View 1 (cartoon, rainbow, N blue to C red):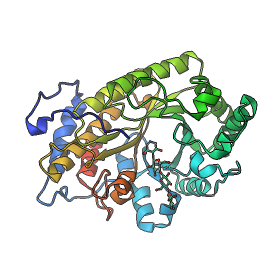
View 2: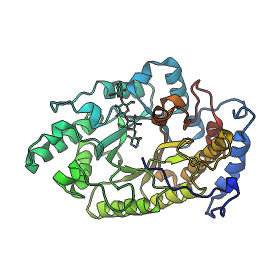
View 3: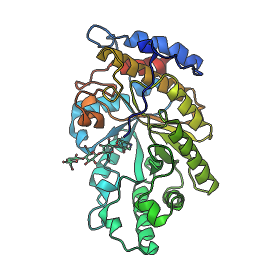
View 4: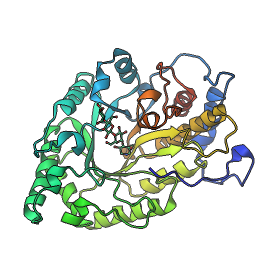
Length: 369
Ligand code: G3I
């Protein structure tokens, strides 16, 4: 994932402080969040009773899970205390479901679905069509569109149909826009079934398999790359004009601690202008991927907390009908994909011992505000 461009930060006293239409709620929440998460000597947030996030939020609070994590009682206790929705981090994607011979396996997806059902937790489906996953079973299919298209439709129908009545929505198309925002990505699905047609088709097939849930497009770096946000919005318009049953928009929100204040607010508001449901679908805030202008780890942690507070505040300011869910991409830091990439990162709300961090206190304060 490309690092967003670095911007001078007000923290370092360089560059102008970006002006942005921060809402009253943000202005109220920010000092609260900062008080709650002002860096302390050991950079631990002020102790105090921890309110379950899902009880503070008027909308679902989600996280991503892996089937293997569900055997850890400390993990599942923390998850069920704070979160009301789960997304399979990878085991409901083609990379897990589609076997080399083209058959499907659902053991782990079913285990996560059963876990969610048993605890009254929402299950969000992620992700049906993704440039990054093109299993050999599809690549091998002959060039004739008929067999390839039939296999494509069969996959979407099988997966969405299996969780009909439980999954509360699906990322139908994931990361369709090039990292530089210049165009749409070119990949097996677009080459075989058409640049736009493969997406319109996927939405129609998913809708036929479950007509009762919102169907999402989903992408990342929208808050840090204006060209990509623009291309994403144009794609949404094209799909809607083409009659795709696209009824919801995902904003992954994988961001870095050096992201300029206001960027998240502007992005969430821009996407909300379509009037569709919005999902902050994969938020985390990397300390390691952030630029080097921070003075200390504590300062990075405080900037991280502010970004979480800003995103929650902007999302909470949307019309209730557009608040699908706010999902954080993991529960405890060590489980994060970013920590698997770099052990010194700490992108989530809870540390390795399950203790709430300054970022948690900032989210809590923003929800209370
Ligand atoms: O757990 C297995 C392990 O048993 C096995 O030995 C190892 C090697 O095969 O694979 C491990 O599974 C890996 C899994 O992450 C858990 O670590 C998969 O190979 C690997 O593909 C998977 O990567 C996931 C990635 O999407 C691709 O599916 C990441 O966890 C997940 O965080 C990442 O999430 C994506 C979103 O779907 C889309 N937006 C970006 C986001 C971050 O890249």
